[in-house]
Length: 143
Image (cartoon, rainbow, N blue to C red; front, side, top):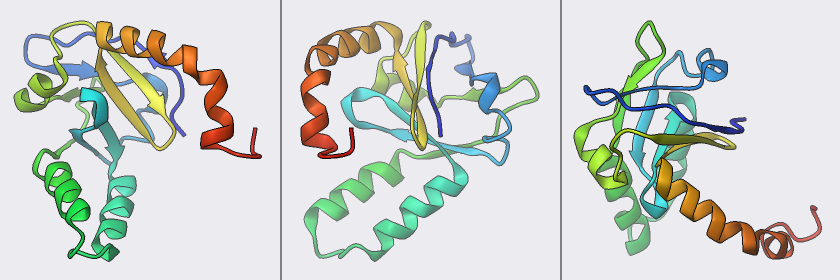
């Protein structure tokens, strides 16, 4: 489970430090791909394989399945952290998420998300107002 908000910076080569407390969990490699709301998803390889298996079982005749899979897989990049815990974010993914220097890496349960720091701040401020009302829609009876 990935938790918290971290604020690393991209270096000039497009590398980003992933949170130190998760480096062991990510030591087998990661897959970085486009996420919703113009962020990037960072999955441990095992979790990406699980998602891949689930999508493989979905009906290819469903247009939404085809569309989602095409974007997810076409933009995916498998990466390994270097000795210092950095991962390279490919240029096309940096452009998609609007990443320049200041980033926010947030824990999102089974994945990390990489956001432009200002975009994350704006998103969080907007969604926090709705957060109190979401629990009964998203998790009825759980919270």
